[in-house]
Amino acid sequence: MKRLAVIVASSTLAIGAHAANWSTVAESQTGSIFSVDLDSIERSDINVLDEKRVDNITVSIRRAYPASKSTTSDSKEGGIHHSDQQWLISCKDDSYYRRAYVYYTADNKVIKSWQSDKPILTSKDFKITSPKTISRMLIEQTCKNYEQAKAK
Image (cartoon, rainbow, N blue to C red):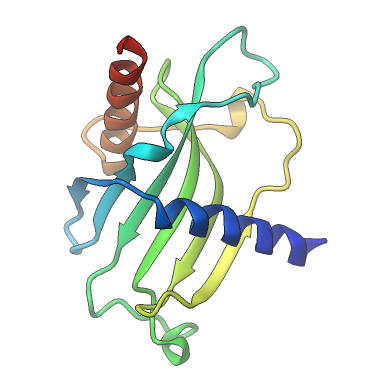
C-alpha cells in the first residue's frame, strides 16, 4: 500500500510538472529558488474537519536547489536538483498542509517521495507561517493568484 502511495504521489506531481506554468516567488539565502505553478492553483474539495465553509486551495510548489546541493544519502543518486510539493493552503490564516513531495535528480529521476495518508484533516495539521518567510510569500502569491482568477 505504501508503494502505491509513493507511485500516486510521484505521478500526481510529475504530471503537474509537465504542464506547469512556474512563477518564481523567492530565493533563499542558500540559493534555492522557490516557484509556484500558476496552472495548479485551484479550490480544493478537501474539507478540514473543524473549519466551517473555508475555501482551501491546492498548489504545486517547486524548490530548485543550488548546484552544490548534495547529502550523504542521495549523493550516489546524483544529488537533489529540485523538489515538487503539493500544498493545501488556507488563505484565511496563512497556513499550509504539505500533502506530498517528490525529490528529483538533474535528469528527473526520483530520489524520494512521500504522500500524506491522513484521510481527515483538522486545523491543527496546518502549519501557520511567520511574516517575511518564504513559506508566507508562497502562500500570499498563491492566494493573490487564486483571487485574481476567481475575479475573471
